[in-house]
Length: 146
Image 1 (tube, rainbow, N blue to C red):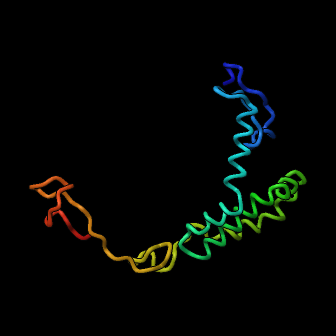
Image 2 (cartoon, rainbow, N blue to C red):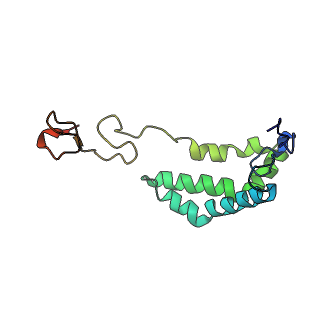
Image 3 (cartoon, rainbow, N blue to C red):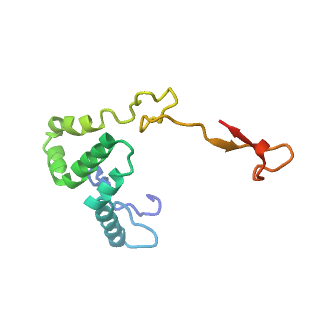
């Protein structure tokens, strides 16, 4: 992009996804920025945040999703102010506490339980190739339990 003279800025403070820093191909810089803000408003509507939260199987993770997405995106002007005034370190414990157990193993995860819900998992039949048939054939010999 530099060789094509498409870079618009070199100031790193504008490299934050909210500013167009290059001349796009196939659209104007204004169209790119308008598209960004349209998508941002659509993805971070409260209804979209709640809908995303309900995809989480564990209630605690639903609240974590709402707290993080809502707290970060809906309070973005506050975070921006905290960053620019050098006060963000005082506020970081809040999102860190929300994400503190993200990815942590759930009890029973290594004992045949679903790592997200903690419920007992039951073996599911899988399809294996039968020597006489293709893997898609309905052959009792091709069905095994994993």
